[in-house]
Image 1 (cartoon, rainbow, N blue to C red):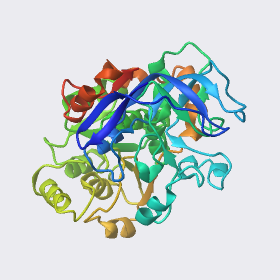
Image 2: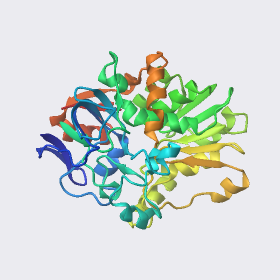
Image 3: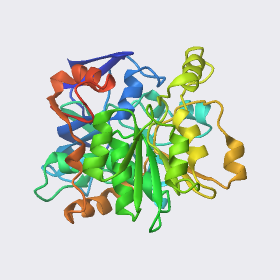
Length: 389
């Protein structure tokens, strides 16, 4: 089969690789009909995630048709159309029983690696380094899906792939980030990062009852999408002092909750941005927490900072005194995607949202390297790429 494989920083290529096989009686094999490039994949592409190995198949947003199942798979059969969530979860451990699927205790065979870095291990994830299991990803023609009775959701209606594909990751991720804000009628929510996750976080904030949502970014096409497709008010952080403007927009109180949808590669103009880039280059910090610092300082007293953006290691100059003295609640985590599959599919069926609004580019799988370069460099107003095997 063809698959998009990682080889080095800023180097991926589509190659012929062996077809996946059933390795466990709970596995399924899915023929992939649509897959996508996630903003998190750029962390692999840009060399920020350790334990990647040459030839690793990447990608964790995919859907398709079941072509084979292990003998113990009961919920799926050959021919079923499914969306596969990105965390790999057993469904039976302490955390899975509490619907905290991204913390599954049984799905990361390399848990010892994660324990050394983070203290404890989260679940395995498709196509996202050996630190998180070394599983082959979904930017391919076929994928092996472990614990197939727990993860995939069947799509039994006439929706297009693009209307349901993002149940695999970015729609639940944005929704969980908004849900963590404990939104009440009349609330103002500020979202840093108007990429796909940020778009879904903003849309979800409105779905959950926010009165005003403010999107913060620097790319005109992202800000335009936030205004036209989501209904958000927007700020370009290169043209305005974000903290001062949010202060003015909220009568001096600050947003009721702030969502960091940018993560480890966030940018800032001026000295602060230069500081983080130098620290990162000298290996004195692994991630750039520009947005996280700003979200903490902007949030109103007693508010929530919800972190959907990916962080991988160590950050510097976090204003923890602000968190403690102003009773700020921090909520974060890899998305417990399986928890949200059916409720969000129901919202799609009810016509409350059509997730395909984020798609800007559609390309064949063979053009994955060009798509990564375009997405990483923000060329051609690229916001979301769907690849077709």
